[in-house]
Length: 83
Image (cartoon, rainbow, N blue to C red):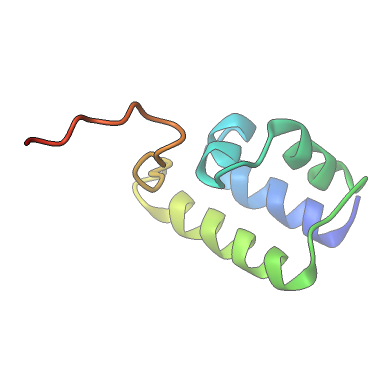
């Protein structure tokens, strides 16, 4: 396991955040990719690692629960605009 994988798992666990919750907050990220990072099989670029760890850390400290960004248009039905 890489340092990034260990740190990601530790921050997630400290905040009580599941893998699926963490993946859901990074639009387009699959749980399998997150698992591969944590197991050290893959890792994102270093610049992205810092952003990911920062994002997980901030979410973990917010009431020890995960608050994601509002759903993206791909994740929620499109509301009809008033005419």
